[in-house]
Length: 361
Image (cartoon, rainbow, N blue to C red; front, side, top):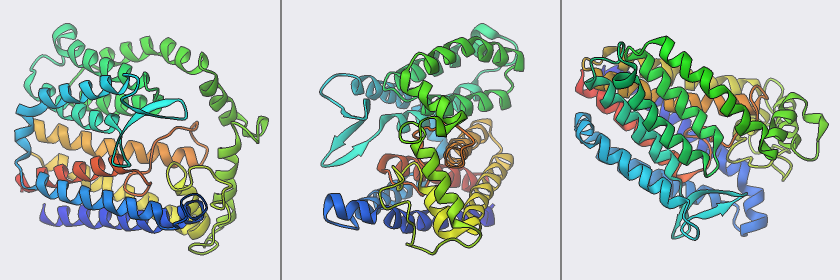
């Protein structure tokens, strides 16, 4: 287990270093033009990284089992923050979405904290309940109500991508804990009409689906990001155009240092860079699930599974969007994309995973 922890740490450190390099590469031109400082986003990212390291070291010093007692208060605080976020004047709105609080120029996105809190709560709930596999009302319905509440608050921001990703994580956790597949299938089938309404009744979401099917229907509008992302990945070839030499980052590809940073990696480092990045996430998932497999208590095992899935699902969706496998969503690439609260929560998740591994050595 010691070697396993070292491997996870090496993989995460490699991803973090890769992120720092490409945040600067992808944002320097935009930052110089708009902030008069080419390292503007890199400096802020490093500050967030230092904060994440300090908090992670604190989490590493705790016994993860203390989270069992904190699960409900932790979730309650997260839900309260999501509610406060919707109160006019208390949150920051960008692009029609209210997802952030601002403190001293830095943003905090409560939905990231809510994802972690929900995973802790579900791990605690599933480890305590003995009738998950038998009772729909007492075993399966309570976590669905909690998940539904969090999803509604996230959807109200609006943020469909985050809501879907956390639902995927929780469903896998519940399935592993023994919930009947028929129960989950019934909820999934019932949710399809609501998902259809959420997508096709909202103009910008409907445009995203249409542009995903054929981005050239609106190449200067809803299909612009996908097209520019494909140009970036395609122009990289096998070896890439060279570090720092991307042309798409020259204000062609929107959100180059956040949602589409994988495309810049592909352009500058080519297929070798993209495959290496994917392999790093694969190794993280493999080592993380090995921690879960070797964990003795059910709470720790489910918590480890949830933490690994939280990061892996976001990585899969982000990379899939960049490669046009999925419709455009605003999910960052863990450890690599610019974004303070996402990086902090991902690093804390890794610290908890290492904590679980250490306690079960």
